[in-house]
Every structure is written in C-alpha cells, then in structure tokens.
Amino acid sequence: MKSFVSTLFKKLENFLLPKFSLLIPKYSLVGDSIFFETSQFPWAYELEANWKVIRKELDQVMQYTDALPNLDDIYPRSRHLAGDNMWKTYLFYSYGFKSKKNCEQCPETTKLLEKIPGMKLAFFSILAPGKHIPEHYSKIKGVIRYHLGLRVPEPQMNCRIRICDQTAYWEEGKSLIFDDTFPHEVWNDTDDYRVVLWLDIVRPLRFPLSLVNGLVLYLISVSPLFQGIKTNHEKWEEKFKALQK
Image (cartoon, rainbow, N blue to C red; front, side, top):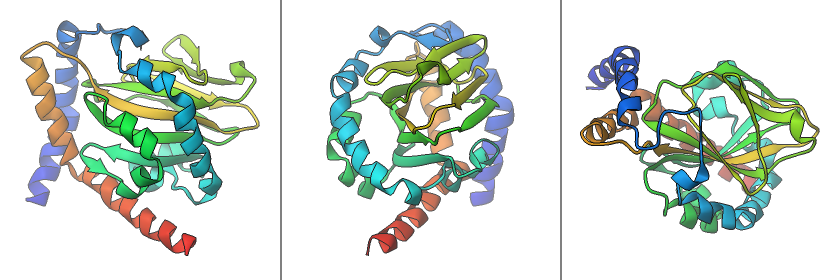
C-alpha cells in the first residue's frame, strides 16, 4: 500500500499537478495574480488586529530559537533552500497534522488559526540575519501563500521578497498574500531575525474544480512526503522535551 501511494504521488506531482494548474486561472474566484489584496480574504483582518497577541506568543518561542528545527529537518526537500541552520520553523498545522504541543504553547495564536477557512499549513517562519533563500517555486497552485509580519527588522529595503519582477516588503502587523507558484526569492540582509506567520490556504475555486482541488490536496496530505513531515516533527518534539528537563 505504501509503495502504491508513493507511486501515485509521484504521478500526481510530475504529471497531474502541472495540468491541473493550467485550469485554475479559469476557475479561480480571486483571479490569477502574483499578489492578492487583503480584502479578498476577510479573515486576514482579524489576524492583523491581533498581531501583537501573536507576537507576544512568538517572543516566548524565540527564547528557544537555537533549539527549534531547521526547515529541512521537518521538510527534507527544502535542503537546497534551508540547509544552513538559518531558517527555523515552529509548526502548528500541516495538511491534517496538528502539533498539539506547539499549539498548547501558543493558545491565542491557535484560536485565531482555527477560525481560518481552508487553512492547510501554519507555522512561524524564522529567518536568521543574512539568510538568502534562492529562487524557487511551488507546484501546488490549489493553495495560496499568506504571510503576517511579526518581526520585521530595519532597514526595510534589506528584508524583502522578489516574485517574478516585483519586489515586496513585510510590515509588522500587515498581510502579504501571494501565489507561490511564481518564481520567488527572499533576502534578510539585516542584523536581526525576520519572522512571519506562514499559512497555506485553499484557493477559492468555482465548482467543479473546487471538488477536484479538494481531492488533490487530500492526496497530498496522505503522500509519503507530508506523512514524513509529521514523523520528523514528532522526532523533534521528543528531542525538545528532553532539552527542557
């Protein structure tokens, strides 16, 4: 069964996802732009209104920055982007998996996250000073990427994301929403950590593609890749628990 699922996921990733992505612009209820307006996702206003509440819980997490897992510890495929101990993550949810320990440590953030329709992935994304993420892109066009600025060091021009030929800058307490299937690149050329609340949310689509998208995202959630995220995170939790004793 495991071998069958692995084979199915490879076919989904290599053949079906690209073809499926070509259909999405026609059915997307929010268009097919690089960036999106906050008004297109009204739930984002509540996150912005409560960003200091989230920031307060983040500050508690940041006491353990060195002990937090690197992104590639949890998601090995990101090693070419994060294999330098400079991109840390604090996971809440990942495609059906909930980190109970992390959610318990950040109860107010968790309450806000659980109100968001179509939320598939949620974590604090923590970039160390000097971190550069080279150009890359996602194959999953059925979700949209959301960032809430929580710690954004100055100068603003040195902490930025380029998507295609457009450059954007994070602001504390503000949303940045974009389609990560477009090539993008990130820099933190400052002397402090940059932290955002990172979400992947289901892209609003017209019927019947909305149903197909639900099936695609379900297959992704049961794939060996995303099941591995759960396993890797649980291993880190055990290590972290031992450090706290």
